[in-house]
Figure 1: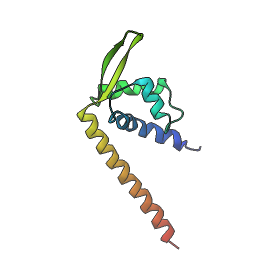
Figure 2: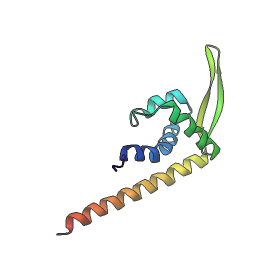
Figure 3: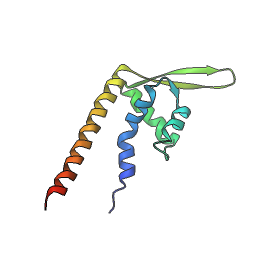
Figure 4: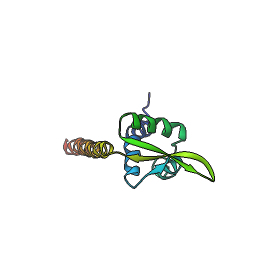
Length: 112
C-alpha cells in the first residue's frame, strides 16, 4: 500500500496554515479558501468549515457575525492569542522535523 503523503501532510499542516493566514487579519471562510488554495489547491469548504469549528472549540480562533445589507451575514474569523502561541509552537515543531529529516538524509549520504 502506498501512502498519500500529500494528503497526510495537508491534513497535518492545514490547521496551522489557517492560523497563519489569520495573522494577516480577520477573514471570512470564502476569502480564506481563496488564499489557502495557492498552497492547498484541493481544499474545499467541506474541509475548511469543520476545521474552523474545531479551531474555535480549541480557543485558537474566534468568529463574529458580519451583517451585510447586500447579502446574507457571514462569519468573520480572527486568530486568538492562544492561536498565535499555537502557531509559533507548530512552526517550531515543523522546523525541528525538517532538521531531523535533513539529518537522516545527510547520514544516509555519508554511509558507504
